[in-house]
Amino acid sequence: MVFLVATCPPGREGDAILELEWALGGVRVKGTEWRGVLIAETPLGKDELVKRLLSFETQALQRVVPLDFLLSAKLEEIEEKAVELMEGKTGSFAVRARVRGNKKLGEKEIEVAVGSGIVGELGLKVDLSNPDWVVAVEVLGRKAGVGVLRRNEVLKFEVED
Image (tube, rainbow, N blue to C red; front, side, top):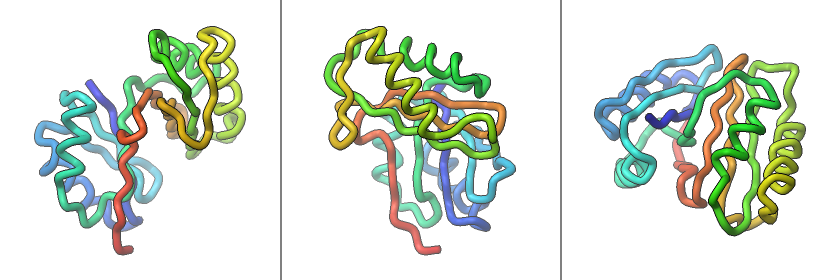
């Protein structure tokens, strides 16, 4: 199961939900308490969902981030899961965090803690400008999604507001 955090212009959530359903098939999509932010689950693998979304002509989706796990938004759990996901990977990495609706966690705090954990446990090199891997952390209130992605797996689309 792959989880997705998708964004769209506020007010276009219905269109974005339909686009995800059309592009991916058996996906379950829900709105969140944040305007323009959706969360979805799909049985497709990352490679297949990236291929389908890249070939789909979107009118509402702005950004889609595939995630491997949803867990509680606790820094220790996020760090532990990120290190686990990076085991066996080679090359460089960067951590990219987005926080919505959680005053206890900051984006930079997550990026530094997760990055330090990966360097400390696995000895991988940080490259913020051109990493081989991106550790994506999406915090939505009390939940956090964590995923390890190749460069081309964070999808960004140009959409008219």
